[in-house]
Every structure is written in structure tokens, then in C-alpha cells.
Length: 163
Image (cartoon, rainbow, N blue to C red; front, side):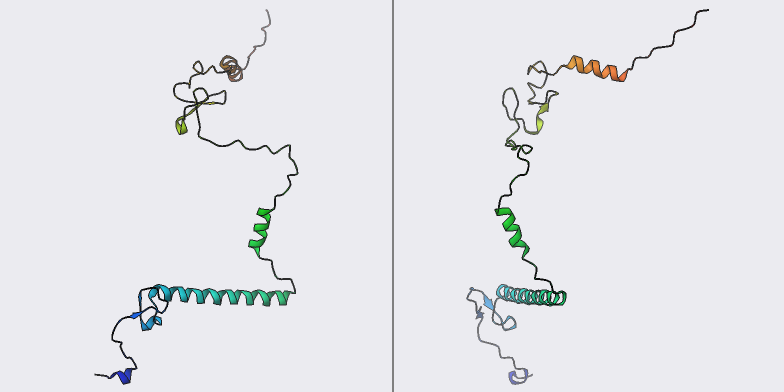
């Protein structure tokens, strides 16, 4: 058997608490930290390296191109959202009506997805869906006459010559 002097590993007598005092046990392989604290530390190191490399890359590219450094996009977006822009056409923009629950136009009962829309443009429940139940102003007769007239154009035959 190899001795502890040859391997350089000296096991401790008991478990080691995490050096971040989170209450979990650490190990020598994770620098006396628990697995969560070690993972967080490695992630922070990687992010710091990535940020340093990207800043260095931006500085080098701006020096080579002799252009000013780009402005942080998140700052521009926040400024645009915070500052109201004047509307060039105030007449054309109308305030949108508040979208509430869909209700029957006659009895104001909530209909949701089961509502029936009429040709007059209103929404009705199952009781008031028929035109005679909600006093519909739509003229069904003239609409039907127009549809028939479009579907059946007037055909006139030429007059026959008398013999």
C-alpha cells in the first residue's frame, strides 16, 4: 500500500463545511465549497472572461476602424420607452375601446366564445341570436334581393324577325 506521503492526499477526519457558509458540505475537489457554490463561482468567472474579451474586441475593432464606440442599446431602448413621442396625426389615431368580456348586446349576459354575431354587427347569446328576438335593424329582404340580382343577371333575347 502507498502511504499518504507519496500520494500527497491526506483525508480529514470529518466532513468539511462550505467556505461560503451556506450550510452544505464541501470537498477538496471543489475548493472546499459545496457543488452549488462552486458552480456559481465557475459561472461568474466565465462571464467575467467573456465580458473582458468582448470589451477588448470592441476596443480593438473601434481603434482599427477609427469609429466611436457603439452606445449601449439597452439605454437607447429605455430612453425611447420613457419619453413619449408626439403623434404627427392626432386625428387619425383613436383610442382603442377597453377589451372586456364579450356580452350579449340585449341582456348583457357573458357569452365568451359561444356568442353569435349577427349581420347587424352585434354579439348575442343563444336566446337573442335570431333577428326577431333582438330587434335587428339589418334589412334581410333587400340584402336577399341584391344577392339574387347579382347571381341572376337579366338576360334579354334578341327580337325575332317576322316572316
